[in-house]
Length: 613
Image 1 (cartoon, one colour):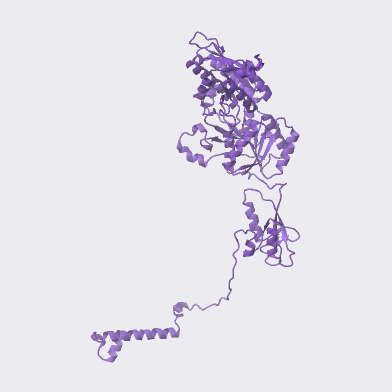
Image 2 (cartoon, rainbow, N blue to C red):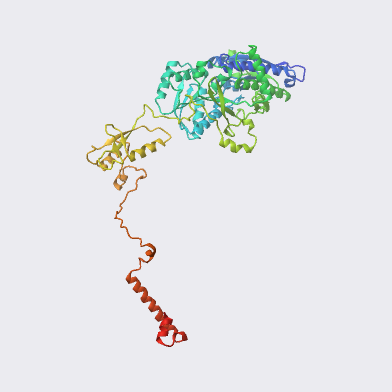
């Protein structure tokens, strides 16, 4: 068993070892390397953090290679480090997390975003960045906002790319969209191969492309797309945060920026705070004095917070009586009892306690609150949606996993009174590729797709419904207009070709036409085809858009209105005689009933007649 020598002040060691694994040859790696060094300097200068204990950092280069990264990780493990910051690569993280779990050494990554990296599989893996699950949900929210349905996903062919696109596919399902084509690019793919793939994609109907890869391949891809005219109007390009990190750290040359015009980019959101502003100012001053050769990006801030999270957790570890000790890993000894080189790897006995303390972290860092869920992922996730224009970019929206898309910064959404505004105004206007301000519909008619064969009856009569344009193979008429209007309302492309049925001299046999449709010689029929029982048994009809039936036509006879006495015209001679007869009959009935009891109905017959009338 190996234990560190303890200092006299409260049983704490004078120094403790921590490791860091970054890729020096990448933009993120160069930023993270300097950020970790600055964090270590701040921790060791702050006597309130570790009570005099100094962190001793061993940093190694993973070189973006799984083999070199694994070798570097093993070297770090041999140095009995209490914890490791990194790695930044998801590919390397899978290997290193497995080793760390066996040796009980917590690793805190600032850049490994692969959704499949979890503490369920790797108990000692945590990260101060967010999983790509959230980024892909943000991408899906943008796609759902504009109503695009068919998406082409282009990704780097490794764990980071493949698993990210799986997360995108799941997220798209929630907004009614789907990936119609997945295109994988090898890490070292050449420009000729990229160009060949893009040519094939340009022949397809979907015009919405999501690019999830590393900067090297991504830059070449957009350059080839520009050369092929695929950064023009009608195209939609969405890039994940690899591009925003590149733009934040290094402003590309004019030619490179020209290949990004109109692209929508996801960018990790860091809330503005005094702490973040002070560190950014400090970084900019170092950049001016050429102490650093890159500008700051979000992953540098995540690396800084990761270092502080480890320092605070080590402090709590010692406060709770933790002891830094390492024991042999018995299975690494060979059968003869001699030690192999791997036998130098030791198990950190205080690892479970330090891991538990790390999961309970709760402090405010440069990126905001630093808290972890039970899966070891950073709580809360927010992204900026930016639009590249000219030599810079413009923020057009924000996305959080709580409130979705909004033009209001996440930290400003503190009251429910904002909710209505959020729903009404989710994104600002975007300048699309080709400097277009019209929202692309996301698809075109494909050049390599199969056309539907639409049969049209060719006849002499009733040419208002369907007819052939003289001298061409084009069709016109009311039925054709209805069909074209219906196709244009669809949210996906339907290539078709009209085929005339009949010789144009005599009316074609409509039963034969419907029969050929049922036998799949044609894909559809457009024309004045009546819906009858025998036809409806073998094919489907649309709702009828023309009313059919029998009608009677009669001549209209003009009748003299009669002027003022027109109301008397219905009273014929027979009507007048009938009315008079009833008048006399009623008088006789009244007389019969009244003359016995009523003196007015008695007397001279002439008087009685007048009374009756």
